[in-house]
Image (cartoon, rainbow, N blue to C red; front, side, top):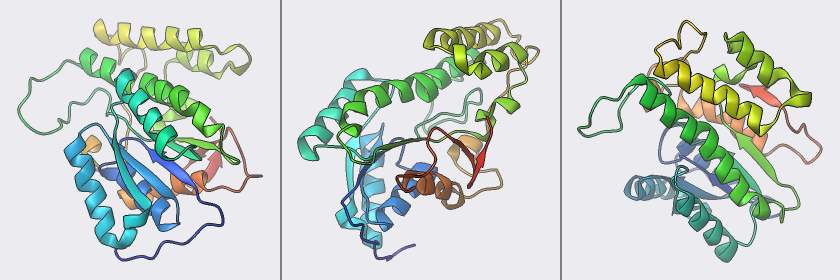
Length: 256
C-alpha cells in the first residue's frame, strides 16, 4: 500500500485508533487514512507511536495521520486525549478500540523484565482489554455525539464470541441480554480472576485468546495484520443505514 493516494471522502471524517503503533492497529490506521479519513494514531509508548506515524507519512499519508500518546490504563492519559481532540478537531466520527494484550501468555514487550504469573497477566488483560476500552469509550463518547455519523468499533479476538467460552455460568450470564448489567459483567470478570489466582482457570473453562501474526501471538497465526485490519476498517466505514450493535467475524455478520 506504499505510495497509495488516499481516496477523498465527501465530508471530512476523524478517527482515533488505540494501540496503533504496530500490528493490526497500525494497519487499521493505514487503511483508514488511504480512504481519506484523518486518523489520530495512539500508542502507550510515545517514541514507538511517533516512529509509526513517520512510517505512514513516508507512504504518502502525511495529511491524514497525527499522533497522541494514550495509555488506556491511565485515566489522566485518556483525559488528555479527549482534551486534544476537543481543542484541535472539535468532534470525533470513528473510535476503533484496538489496544489489547495477550491475556495469560507473557510474550514480552522488549527489554529485560521479571516473568509474571498467570494471575498478574490476567489482571493486566482485563484492565487493558475491558476496563481500558470502557474508560476510553466513556471519555470520548461526548465527542462522538457531535458527529453526524458516529461509530465505535471494538476489535476482539475470535474468542470474543460467547460460543467460544467454555465456562457455562459465564456464558449464560453474558448471554442474558435482558438482565445484563455492568455489575453482572464485573461479577464474571472477578470470578475469572479468582480462578486464575487459585490455579483453577483451566478446570473452570477459561482460556487464552488468539490470533493474528503479531507480537501478541509470537508472530504465529493464519492472518497477516493487513488481512485482519480489513474487517474493522470495513465496519468503521459502513453506510449510515448499515448494521449497528452487531458482532462481525472477519468480514461477515455473526451471532455472539
